[in-house]
Structure formats: structure tokens, C-alpha cells
Picture 1 (cartoon, rainbow, N blue to C red):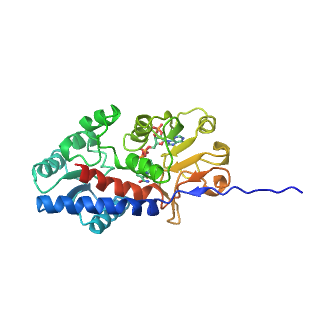
Picture 2: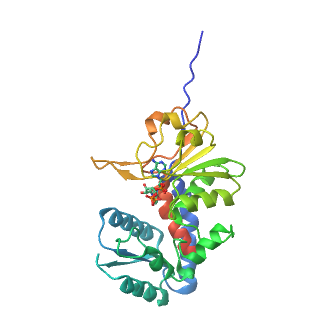
Length: 285
Ligand code: NAP
């Protein structure tokens, strides 16, 4: 008689993983407050009122409240000049009660995002995106502040006992915010890394060679059955909104779920870990 065994992939649950990291973070917040007499405070500088940015800021504020930290949210007009925006960053640099600063991206097209980010004091750079901090994480310095998504990816994998050391990783996406820091994090942890992007000749050819696929393209359905093979781990960083308002990742979850070994869902995978990692960065600063 022939038995067909259907493999079930493990769901790497970011909400559950985050809870495991919470007690340690709450302890750090308490320790900071008792020594300094202040609440650890993250300044979020937002320009305009994009709906997606608004919802990310809301999530950060709600998380700060849960752990006993504070968010100082500054929302500038859509038409603010680059000079005035840099002025706000400098005020935050000078404010003793602010330990971390992030500029909510994306910024409007008339503003040079690199000029604004580089105005952040590297000692308050909670997103790890100033030139000084990029140099540190690219160089593999142990205490470098990594962009939160990369740190979140590293921590969800660590929570589920998955090691990057010696593994073949394919990262899809090469942005400075996600793809490149994720690739650098994997390299620093001893993986062999391939970075794919929109000009990659044959994506499936690359992804099939991986032990771990990390997709950060923001293209729903980009990774399908033809891109995967049995036993792989998939970290789906992409977040897109469908026409009916549903949040989806880059991976066609239903098409791959019975083939691969483990996968992060969207929502509820990397997203919650990214918010956690941002506040871990704040406490490290
Ligand atoms: P981005 O700046 O638009 O970068 C997207 C990258 O994907 C680019 O490098 C692009 O290649 C590549 N790409 C696009 N289409 C592709 C294709 N068909 N094949 C292969 N590569 C392709 O976006 P981002 O800021 O990096 O964000 C990426 C995704 O992650 C978005 O969905 C975003 O919402 C999400 N995100 C999630 C979290 C989280 O916590 N889960 C945090 C931040 C961002 P080129 O460089 O050639 O254009």
C-alpha cells in the first residue's frame, strides 16, 4: 500500500516571537528610567500624512506605550522645505530627553532623504541609516545599530532556532532600508548571500539554490511554486495592500506552503519583529 505523507510547513509567528523578547525589553526600559529619571523617548519625524506612514506611526506609538517608553511624534507639512526639516532633526539632536530619532520614510520627492537622515546625530540614529552607522554595520561591528527590519529578521530566525551560519541565503530586494541591511546582517552572521533585484535575469534559478529566501520586493505573488524547493525557509518581508484592503507579502503563501519547511506569514511575521527591533535599537542607544 502506498502512503502519501503531506509535509506541513512551520509558521514563523512574529507576534509570538515578539512576546518572548518583551520581558527583557521592559526590564531595560525600567532600568533606564530608574537610573536617568526619564522615560526612553523616540522622536518620529513625519512629513505629510500618507495613510501607510500614519498606520506605521500608530503601531510604534502603541508598542512604546506597552513597554513604558515614549514617542515624540512631529508631523511636518507636506510642503516643508529640506532646510526646515533638517532644522527639526537638529532640534531633536540637541534635546537631552530624546535618545533616538527616526525619519518616517518615504519623504516627498522635493526632499533629499539622505541629507535629512545624515543630519541625525549617529548617537541618536535609531534606524541605523546615517552614513556613519551604515559604515559600522557594513563593516560587521558587533554593536552597530542595524536598521530595524534586518534586526527583526535576525531575531525571528534566532527565536525559532534557525542559524544563518554557513547557509546559502537569497535576498530579493536591494534597497538601503531593507534589502542591503538584511543582506549585510546575513553576511555578518556567516551566510553566503546572493542579492536579487528587478534586473535579475532568472529569479527562480537563483532562489532555488537557497537554503533561506528573504523577500523584500513589495510585489505580491512574486515568489511562487516555481521559485522554491523542498526544505527551504522563507522570510517574507514584503507588505502590500490589495485592492480590497488586505495586507499581503511577496510570497504566494498557498502555492508554497506544502513544499517549503518554514515561512513567515503576512501580516504577523516580520512586521511585529521590526517594531520590536526599533525599540531595542532605542534602548541600545
Ligand atoms: P523598495 O525601495 O521599493 O525596494 C524594492 C526592491 O525590490 C528593489 O531593490 C527592487 O529592485 C526589488 N524588486 C522589485 N520588483 C522585483 C522583481 N520583480 N524581482 C526582483 N526584485 C524586485 O522597497 P523597500 O523599502 O525595500 O521595501 C520592500 C518591501 O518591504 C515593501 O513591501 C515594504 O512595504 C516592506 N517592508 C516591510 C517591513 C516589515 O517590517 N515587514 C519593513 C520595511 C519595509 P530594483 O532595485 O532593481 O528596483
